[in-house]
Length: 429
Image (tube, rainbow, N blue to C red):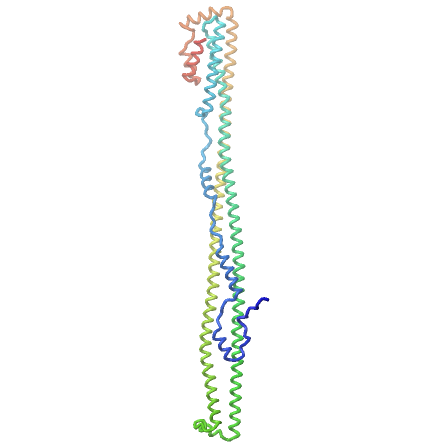
């Protein structure tokens, strides 16, 4: 069976003035168990306040935003592209082989001698292969554009993902902080209510002691008055009132002793009352100081909680401002990227069109040159050998003006190595 705890504010057993005086003199407020438990719960909860928010993503977001804001416009030089150089090397080799074959076939038609027809055939074969290189350029531009846009899109996607993670982390933190302050307010209120209720019990106990003290004091005074009245009655009956003083001094009668006892009792009551009131005043002052300290503690705790809550609101406002700045920077970066992306697509499309135009122009030239060669071949088929020898005699060697041919090829953009390869092919034919 559980033992019932003693009520510290019970007045049971205080059956006389002396015991009440002792209880009043020793009365001192001590927080009860409910107050201590509420205070412990509040203190423990205050110590669990979430630390200040530390972003795990903002640094990465700022770095990527700076990268996005400083992203260069699309630029592609196919001549410096290793893949284009590989294509060019392959096309030059194919053009060299085609030129050699064409020159050999033309020479065979002219009896093994070089002629303008052989030169034209070799040139057309070479140019036909090299013009195919132009058709590669749009593809290379497309690859470069895909790489550029993919990198930019990936950068925007990374920023968006990090920004969303940052928002999620902030939302979680502030939900935790809101829960903390909600619970803090609840525990603070619980503590204040428990303290107020407990202190009300203490002040009620003091009021009960004061009432008991007044009751016993009244009883004591009534008893003294009754005794005084009994004494006065006796003296009146005996007619000795006039001689009371003398009898009290001489102490020769029992009535004198009675009077002396009454006087002593009255003095003792007065002295006890004066001493008690002095002690009671000291106790009351101490109780007032305790109550003031308790109120100061509550006010200080309330101030600390209010200060912490204000700091939380300030931090929240600053974080909202930072979020707004980040959102604006992100919107600017996205707008600039959309513009750069569109410009890159337009530039790639224009470059592809230029390459296609050059390729088409080369094809038209080949078509025209081919028709003329066929005509010349048809008209001179019977005397090809003599025509070849005539061309050779006119030129002094092989019938080809190599300087004029070289200047013509240079004007078309061919390199010295490419022209030399054409010479080698034609000479070999």
